[in-house]
Amino acid sequence: MSEKNSQEIPADIAKMSFEEALQELEQIVEKLDSGQVDLDQSIDIYTRGSLLKQHCEGKLRSAQERVDKIVGKNGNLSVEPANIE
Image (cartoon, rainbow, N blue to C red; front, side, top):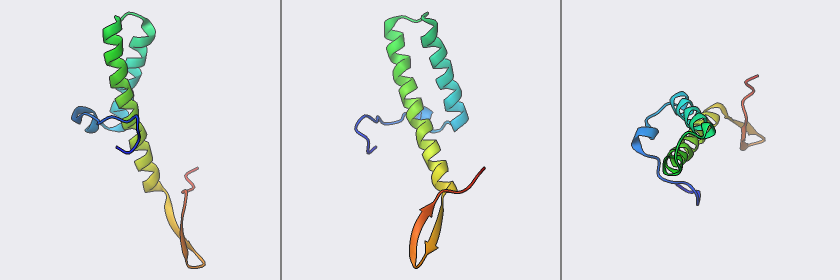
């Protein structure tokens, strides 16, 4: 990955859909917010949550790229965000 803080996404996360990853991320946030997990477990699930977040962001970037369209103006190509409202 190109970002300094990014880690390799594990295969089990990489195969998740955006919705699946987001659901697991929400469950992790609930566990951490509850205060019912010990420190070591908190660190482990926080790390997994970080990877899930990174995966979700990648899925969103990919979706945005698919939605953006290439337009030609005066012989120059540029990218214009799609109007999806």
